[in-house]
Length: 314
Length: 314
Picture 1 (tube, helix red, strand yellow):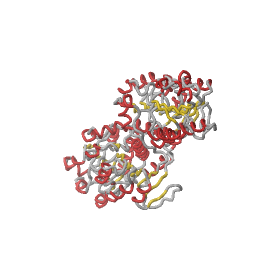
Picture 2 (cartoon, each protein chain N blue to C red; picture 1 turned 90 degrees about the vertical axis):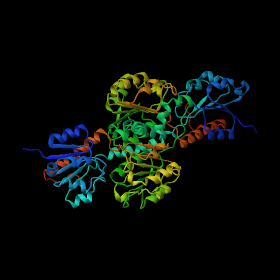
Picture 3 (spheres, rainbow over the protein chains, first blue to last red; picture 1 turned 180 degrees about the vertical axis):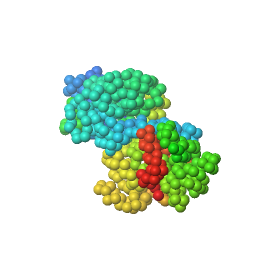
């Protein structure tokens, strides 16, 4: 009995590679630009791709694998994949929702606290010997009891809000519809949300529909005491407008896990003191990455067996 | 009408100095060792000291101010003040409880998240250009859903536990008595607590009664995957035992806001990668320091007016 072929694209952990090799004849590529270099005969027979990465997976790439029926994305955000092009070709797309909500929400709270309480500067203050030489670090900002706005009350946004409720924060949110949650305030547009809060946490999906939604106007509405936290996608924020506001202290700061051109981020970020920068590590824990890989493989296995897909996108 | 004298000891913020100068003839000393240099006649007439600092305020210092009736401490922890010596001299001691609980609890959660999700290393990873050169940082540890032990379920410990409940954590605690809280597990001794959890958060008061309570045995019980967070006092932990365990990876890490000999901390801490170090900034926010100064002055004013003290210690 021959095992089915599987193309795996991206930087997988050893446990994922081992699990895929155990079930499939695996063709592992470091990135999608290596796809044309696979033999045409092989490409012609592959029905499933396990995808990981932020490089565009468009119609042209799909056409390189003519019998393709599934792109199983590793990650909840599938904005790198042209879903419309996939649907037009009868290609199913799956993602890995749910299993990473806790980690991403944890990171959002970690970023909010690290920005307000200056954890990176505090660490430097101790390690550089400044504490012993100069005494206390400058006073920081109280977080508990503040007003927070969740931009996008999806699964992850909801987890963030639940955690911040424990910090006695006043919770505001923007979503497509009023969720009618007792004690939480709905805003029909992002500008109204930004105007009402001290901390704006971006928890929207990426992709064309949310591109630049955190506009210069939203940033202006947040105001001089405002802080932006982004754990979703860099594209959701008008990044040049954010950089201008940070450089000119028109907002108080930002804490960012995602950027427009990651990992080669705009060097203007590096000159800023009022930001906490992280390398897109929202789901970056061992437990969660294992769970994501498992869910990705469940989608591949279901597709190849002709069963219902656990977490389809289209 | 002459205004009463007040000796203020410590590094106060300008708003505190201004408020004290508005109400009293203020004699401001940078530290307690300057007390003998105040003219004897002045020392003889002062009835109240506003104290801030971690240097010992013992019977000998009290005897330099023979008419002393009040030491109003800035801070909830008054372990620097020899309360027994004060009581023996008929000197009342007050502190500033309550107003700083939120900040200290916020910092405890910030430290837990920063240690587990490697926020300081993540920041370095981005700022040093390593992200662009090498890709993702190493995977971290999932925090939500873990088992946490609160060592000391006082006002601050309770605030920490309330916050962590929002992270779906299994909550264990050590306290003098079983508080009988649904869903939270009581432990009658610190070793049992440490054995049951992944994260041990030290939230006890300082002073002789808790000195070295986090012993080598407690640290051993926490185990190789264990992490210690301390936002109370350095003295509560057997610091050499902690350093040994960290250096030999017998525990996974620590996040510390307080140290035995701060701000001149043991240099062995600086060689460790698995620790987050902060410069005793638990209550270090503008809002909270203002509230602490206000409460300190309320105690002074009440004492000098012969009224009941708002927050007495003895």
